[in-house]
Length: 267
Image (spheres, rainbow, N blue to C red):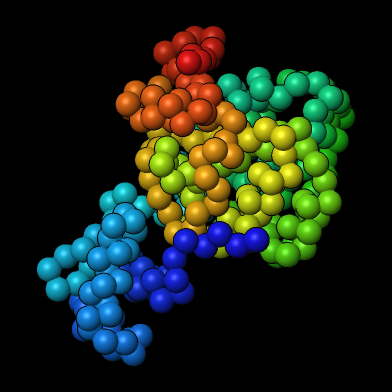
């Protein structure tokens, strides 16, 4: 089941804006062979969703939109916060549980810090595999599929089909953006589809996201906020947005960089 939230034409417009930095209504109309009134209507609606910034005569990239990073880039962005989040989220994994985990530096940190034994981990992430492959007390199921080299993950119909043959106790998911109103976002359709499958086949959903992902959107909607059991973030997150997540029924755990023991604060 696909949950793409924008038409294909909008996707092309966003790609043009991000490639050029800014683009005029006339340039878009010519490139897509559509009328300028249609372009203006599209830009207004895309702007409302926070995916671009409307400018006089055209559009520019949105400051609110979260664009996906490569694995190497992600390691350089908020690495301390991501490790703290990983430590807290790893505590949520109980002995004997089955856990689905997707790609990203934060989920890699979760995998590194899992202490529970007799755990079965299902993953499409080579980073997660690398973190766990030496653990004799953890079983690994590695999903096949099309390889995304920038993220070190497998995606596509084959990966999704394998996921849907299983049921897990928990899914631990990294995300490009998460909003209390609109839920979860990913930057690629193939990545979004893999996350959707993991969420649908897991009894609990744990989102690991540093403060920079909160209140942000990306190109594809993954799932509504009601699908999320727990959000694990860091203590740089704005308290107002954390309360909005709590009001939406999400348990919020905050990894504190000031806590020498790396404990967490709940509701």
